[in-house]
Image (cartoon, rainbow, N blue to C red):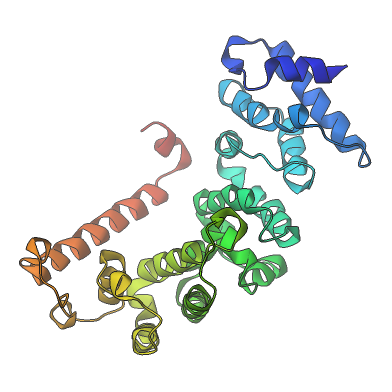
Length: 298
């Protein structure tokens, strides 16, 4: 009985609705979860983003949070647009989302289910304490070169674990660079692993670690010597910032072979890039140290 209702309201902005429509969607999704054998039709599956979106406009009962978490784990659902509204509704309890997201990504097909990358990206926004100790499932996902391309947030947030995560991040960086070189992405990019996403996430994690990962500078530079870092990447600001954060003297970073207007005062520009990054990092740390109520009032 709910399917016609869902078809009529697919994509509707629930801000104009009543709690009745939101409740109807909730009840339909709960009915689906209660029947594992039921085939989920597209109008029903596409109500998940609306279910999440409705959470922005009211206090969300714990039962709805639990329902949303179960939806993440159900392979019949694959559209998780607006899931950040669920995270916002959970507040400091959003760390609960890590386990179901990681489990879902572990169970997924890394080529057919590229849309689930939105779940992996959400991991980057979860509370800091979420990543202090990796679970067995975290370790398994991080060890899978293809499935971890769906979880850039999990890779980058390994930096929360401090220096202990540095060797893992360097290993991921090297492995994904090798895969990117030997398995170039096809024109159907949504069907192939996005190695660049994992590369950028590993770089982000190492850059954040900075001095805590200084003993990995040699291993990172060795990737260039092995021919795994193409010129565009090596001459890019992200790679240069990574080297500086790991302790390479700014003046020792080579200028591009083909100077341009952009490279005028090359090393002075790099110093500005480094100073800006470290200033932003300090501000972020100060924000994280504020009490939750103070952060919400800003």
